[in-house]
Amino acid sequence: MLVQSAVRDGGLPSLLSVLAAIFVVCVTLCAADERKIDSDLVGTWVSKSEKVKTGPNFYDPKKDEFNEPSLPGMSYSFSKDGHYEEALYRAIANPSKPDCTKAILQFQHGTWYVAENGSLILEPIKVDGRQQVSDPCKHDDHSIYSRYNQTELFKKYEVREDSYHKKKRLDLYQFDGSPVNAMLLNDENPSMLPTTTLNPMTSATTAPSRIKRGVVPARRHRRRTTVAKEGMGAADRWWWLGVIMTSAGGLMLFYS
Image 1 (cartoon, rainbow, N blue to C red):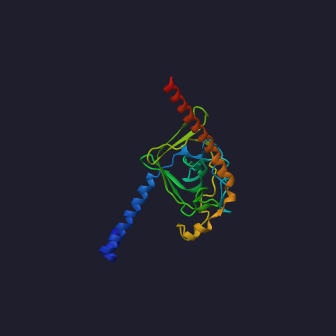
Image 2 (image 1 turned 135 degrees about the horizontal axis):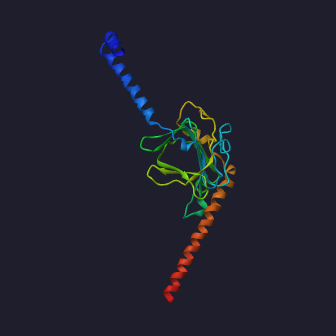
């Protein structure tokens, strides 16, 4: 009926417009069919430290700031209607300079789905993501606070029973197949901030001036950076002890 009307009213151009519209609708419906929700993922998942958890205790959208956990870790929440939230606190060591441990806090939320090939896709709300970077050897007197937007693709995932903790366990694998630290189910009901846009703005792209205004005093992060350093410092001491013991063993073997 639409095709006949287009030919009668406007000829070939109108017909092409109608066909194009039908094509777009078909593509949209097909894409929607490919977006699957796996109920096994629904809930809040936390890593071993259990100090990092999604929800109001990690990122405060009203104050637009992080509530820094005492230890690094990560957490993901998935809802049954296709919304997600992530909370990440990472400590990145510098082996050559142990005092230069970098700390990164990161928040994103948006929608999620499972593709036909089994990949897990996370699509964030572009303007709501936040990232805070503390690098004592590059920015001694402040941390960098800015907007963050990164779509995530996990090549695959596995939900299974953890034999040690007797809880559901989530194993994620990055786009290249490398594993992410395992997480355990913390709550079957996802702990999340409102799933709508929290901090709307006219553009999803962070302007340089916005980044400049995002620079915050170091005193807000000094204690957390120290925690990260202490954790890596212990590992660093064990590494040097291993080097010394290996060297001593080599000398004993040489002179025996």
